[in-house]
Every structure is written in C-alpha cells, then in structure tokens.
Image 1 (cartoon, rainbow, N blue to C red):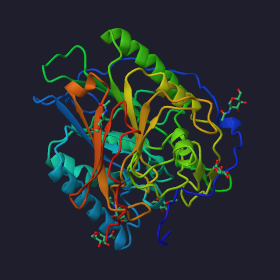
Image 2: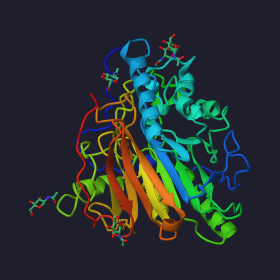
Image 3: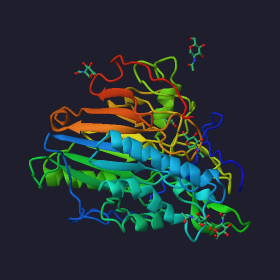
Image 4: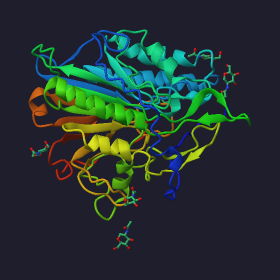
Length: 420
Ligand SMILES: *[C@@H]1O[C@H](CO)[C@@H](O)[C@H](O)[C@H]1NC(C)=O
Ligand SMILES: *[C@@H]1O[C@H](CO)[C@@H](O)[C@H](O)[C@H]1NC(C)=O
Ligand SMILES: *[C@@H]1O[C@H](CO)[C@@H](O)[C@H](O)[C@H]1NC(C)=O
Ligand SMILES: *[C@@H]1O[C@H](CO)[C@@H](O)[C@H](O)[C@H]1NC(C)=O
Ligand SMILES: *[C@@H]1O[C@H](CO)[C@@H](O)[C@H](O)[C@H]1NC(C)=O
Ligand SMILES: *[C@@H]1O[C@H](CO)[C@@H](O)[C@H](O)[C@H]1NC(C)=O
C-alpha cells in the first residue's frame, strides 16, 4: 500500500436499502451502570470549571496519524499534525481536550507498533499537563490496529480519562461519561456531563474471512450502547436529583445531519445561519460507508441503523449539543428543530455540530483547526454553549452561540480556505 491514501467517506447518494441484519440486533445487554470511581480511565483528574466559572474543550478531530509510515510524506504529515495541536493549544487554554475519532489510520500501520502512534499524539497534551478524553473512529480499527489496545495505551497516562463502560461484544470501546464539577468545589452534583459514544466502523483486529479479506465492523452506535445510555442517564438523574446539562461526542455524524444538509428547499446549510465549510455534500453518516479502508473496500448502505441512537439523544433532557467529525470537509452546526425530509423523528432543538479536520493525515487540505466549546456556569443555566473553530493560522472561524435562536441568528460566513 504505497499509493497516496484518499480514504474519502463520500460517494454518490445511496438507495435506501434496509440493512435489516444490522438493525436492532440487541445483543444480551450487560449494562454497566456503575458510576466511575474516583479516578476515571487510567487517571485521577476531576474535571472542574475554572474559578471564573468557565469550562473549555478543544476538539482534535481526525488526526489520522500513521499513514505511509515507510515513506517520507507520512511521518512528515504527523509532524505537521503535532504542529497544529501545539499551535491551537498556544492560542486556546482548554480544561479538556477531546480526541474525537480517527486518531490513527489503521490501514497502513504494522501490527507490532501500530499503537505507538498514541505516544506521539498525546505529547502536546502531556507537555501541558492537559487531560484528554477520546472517542474512536472507523480508522482506529483495522487488521493491524486494535481500538482496545489504543485504550490500554491511553490508560497508561493518568491524564487520559477515556474509558470503556459497555462490554458487549458489539459495543465498540469508547462508550462512557464524565462529570464536570463546579468551581465552588461541590463534589456531589456535577454541573455538566460529557457523553462519549463509539460509532465503530473499519475492520476487526486480526480477523480475516475465508478468502483472506478483512472483516468489516458495523459503523453506527450499537443498540447495547443505546440501552446503556438510557439506563445510565436515568440512574444519574435520580442520583443527582435532576437532568444535569450535557454535551456529547461521537465520531460519525447521525443521519439528521445528512437530512438537514440535503433539505435544500427548506433550509439546508446556509452561509450566514450555519456558518462553516460544507464541501462534503452529501456527507457520510452512521450506517453508510464506501470502502472501509482499501483492504476490504466494503460498502455499507444506510438503513436507519442510527434511529435508536438519535431517539435516545432526543430523549435526553438538557443535552445541548452533539459533536462529530468524519466528514473532513464540513464544520457547521445546525439546530435540529423540525421533522427533516426522509426522517420520522422530529428534532427538539438539539444542536448538532461538526468539528474541524485537525490532522494532516486523512483526505482534504482545508485549513486545519480545532473546534472550541466554551461553557460558563451562567450560560449553563439556560443550556447555552459557545463554540468556534480556531485555525492553525491563529484565526477564529465560525464563532456562534448555541442558544435558543441559533439557526435564526445571522453570522458572518466562513471562508473556505486550504492549508498550503
Ligand atoms: C506540512 O505542512 C506544511 C505547511 O502547511 C506543508 O507545506 C507541507 O506540504 C505539509 N507536509 C505534509 C506531508 O503534509
Ligand atoms: C500487518 O502487520 C504485519 C506485521 O508488521 C505486516 O507484515 C502486514 O503486511 C500488515 N498487514 C496489513 C493488512 O496491513
Ligand atoms: C513502526 O515500524 C515501522 C517499520 O519499522 C516504522 O517505519 C515506523 O516508524 C514505526 N512506527 C512507530 C510509531 O513506531
Ligand atoms: C426544490 O424545489 C424545486 C422547485 O419547486 C423542485 O423542482 C425541486 O425538485 C425541489 N428539490 C428538492 C430536493 O426537493
Ligand atoms: C417511517 O415510519 C413509517 C411508518 O412506520 C415506516 O414505514 C418508514 O419506514 C419509516 N421511515 C424511516 C425513514 O424511518
Ligand atoms: C443568541 O446568541 C446570539 C449571538 O450572541 C444573539 O444575537 C441572540 O440574541 C441570542 N439569542 C437569545 C435568545 O438570547
């Protein structure tokens, strides 16, 4: 595999086949309800609002380390990705970094050292004593790369808060939640919850079919995870006596984002109301994939696999926004407040956002950057978050307030630029 890797998730719009085999297959669900002990993941850091009542997250999306490692350009683009992270973290001072999937490109790595890229990725975070939390993406699983081993490697640092809370065989790995406590030191009831979901995808580690091909992993949030989410959410509500406001992270976007993008006659993605780049059109959503890596080239057809997950998101009181990546050419946010064409679910005002492609690996050369999310204790009382993209150039792009009028508020358009 020496050719330039493209890994586009895009393709022609698909027929709506019902992928019945993959819908609603609820494996014997072992719901892991236990709240995290003191010390989440491998570590012990309690997330807290600052003394000025703010909590900021920097999202590094689609870093794609480890491409073409035996050629000059592969390692060079990883050096570039590290430069992006350092540059963003010199400009922004988050309390948490989220690595929101596709940390590594598994198609091209060797079994004996594929997980070592984690060491490289987390250097800028270790140097700044910054805690991080990951979701894994479709490129984080392949014949020579295991998302379980990525988790194990992460947990060798106490700064990693990534966990695996759901242990069914179909759940994937990065499904868990984190509490963020208030600046006043109240340990009992957090002010914010962060949910992390594994949308899986790619190929299973070290598995081949009888004809020697890699074995594809479904690329949507599994029913066992939806069951864990709804049960845990209810348990936390009763434990804390309220539905604590929350944010969620999942690598592959849900179908509502595609349905909104394609609803051009109604709204679509509008330059001044959903400011951002919108070049992956149509975007690739959960359940759909064209070629999960050039090993298998498998095509997966959308058939409503993410409906239970979307329903669970809509049923989550005080969930402010869900953040995804995967489609490197899109970085807008939209308010899902209607019944979108082709969908039965009706949005309730939940905001859905893309991050910005941060890595030099993976397809596309849109100016690299990182989505920032700022929550203040004041705004949280009204379920409001602010968000913007900090570009590698130092510029701020697409700064918006996710409040009740997002989608009706007028913002400057975002320039569609490329890194040199
Ligand atoms: C690394 O970044 C520089 C500056 O953006 C760019 O000119 C160069 O092409 C990049 N190299 C790779 C391999 O991505
Ligand atoms: C997996 O890694 C082994 C050992 O380094 C290597 O020989 C093989 O080519 C790799 N396989 C794939 C499919 O990348
Ligand atoms: C993995 O091994 C390959 C082959 O020796 C090497 O080119 C690459 O730099 C190594 N990568 C890491 C992260 O250790
Ligand atoms: C949008 O509206 C035009 C004019 O009414 C119609 O011809 C076209 O089919 C519509 N497109 C979609 C995607 O609904
Ligand atoms: C919407 O609901 C109808 C009636 O239950 C069903 O036939 C159809 O498949 C559903 N469509 C989608 C996209 O879920
Ligand atoms: C939402 O935020 C925007 C941008 O700051 C602002 O113009 C608008 O008035 C806010 N909406 C409400 C209801 O406060």
